[in-house]
Image 1 (cartoon, rainbow, N blue to C red):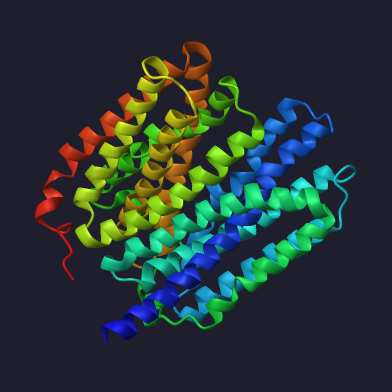
Image 2: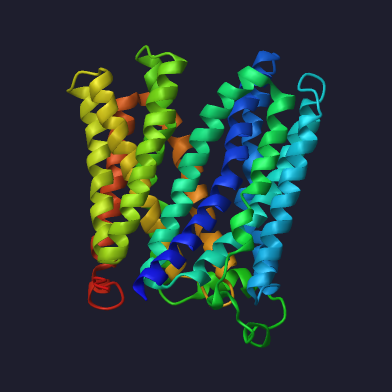
Length: 414
């Protein structure tokens, strides 16, 4: 019985891993290569900076997430949203392959934005299905698949595909990328989930209302979760944002930085995510939330010590990168898992999306602040600032979530 359940769970986890990788690889590829190509065509840095707005659909996706939730009360409904969104994603990628980079750059950017709308919609339906398909004990494992998919997608899209681009070119690479997006849907054909069928949901949901979105913020005790989400890995984001510029300042070239951060770093992030998933499954939410926050604080302190007291060399930088990406990988599991715990029935996609958007907004603000602090006060003060945020996050958890050890977040022993 346990063996069959394990095999069934393994198949489900593989399905979500495919879906998360499929949405991440094209995004990472486009986000990485376009700034380089536009700079080679002598676009201004101000114009290139506006490319950050390409990701706006992923910030605004909470606006149409209620439409996905309201239209889904069966597994087939979630599948329909995922298949249709992913196929549109693939068709747009294929269409972009026929365009010339030098003469159609603005058309390409516009199509990429539309493709991101499709991938963001797929993400809403996928997240909602993930929330419904796993019980509380196993939610951390599917969140490992989400996090590993993101890290692996970033490594492939921002690394391996760039190498292929230089070998075979834009027009030959993108059709294969579109094909991969379609092939990643195959496991979903065989996916089964009795929990996703909720025939009573349609009767319970009222007419569309502002509370479809705002109701999330009206839940009892939800603001402690919102503050937690905003600060939990904020202490890491500034360091992640400034890591590559810092490596440049210490004399490392693009190839070396690509290996250190893009390959080794993201690989460690994958390992951290997988480890974090099993740790949360074994011990529940309370202790991993504290332990991972403590690991984040140690990481920020290490980078401060590295700049001020230690010798900066390849070995000490690799240790810092290992700590940084491992902390980030483990932290994402606690963030995603507690986010799944905080959704309203019938609004799984909406509430999970709102919470991920909170982390995105936090990341954008922290990255911007990091650039300001590092530019005016130097890297040492940046890492001191990050350490203060990490310490605040840890103290906040110890004070606010203390009661949870005695109720819902007790140790899982099954």
